[in-house]
Image (cartoon, rainbow, N blue to C red; front, top):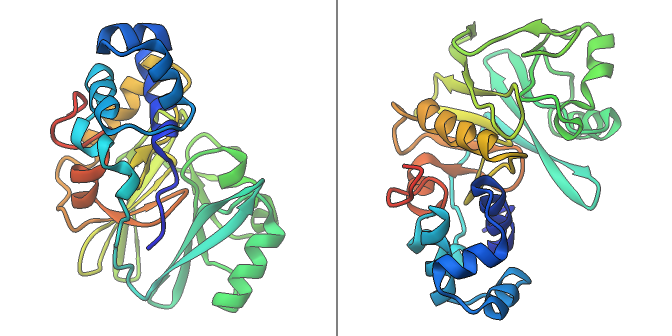
Length: 269
């Protein structure tokens, strides 16, 4: 099973920015020796400190203390293909849905050449339609060559694409694709709910990862991000498949137990 995209230091950094709290203030509030907090922040994990830090930052303490052992084990249907594309020293996900006789692509990665090579290897032809979660280069950088080929691209706030906004939906074959607001990490940003399989699927881009969320530039953006995640998943069943922009697939039920930002005991809940 694949490790989540973020480790405990990534989660700490995102929560510190989200709460606008510096290291010294967190150590003071959590009644932790500043040197011990510095070691933790640098990668020396301590379960007892993790509990105290999580409570101070409004994270779920149990989920955060156990994050090192979290390995999501989601079952991805055969008609959904993960395209794991290179970006810098890491990777970014694009997802392809076989919708009856159409191929539907969600995000494009950074380089069109990498995207097209994987599409050709896995599916043998170009997508019929494309949906973009947000206009960050690792998710939308490959779309321009697809635009030149006349492939319809749906997005919010991106020039030359077909405008889509939260609440809009499209019927494609036996599937319905509905857009929801997942702004926070990026503004604007869309999530895409897919209905028509045994369980619903949510394409989350960088808004929600297995075990984490996308980093937010300000505490206000962080508040918006958490609010939008809660709203988007308010009526979603636990078996909803979560397909993020980075890292492994998960389910909403697993995230409500293991994701420190959204687990049931966290402040954000």
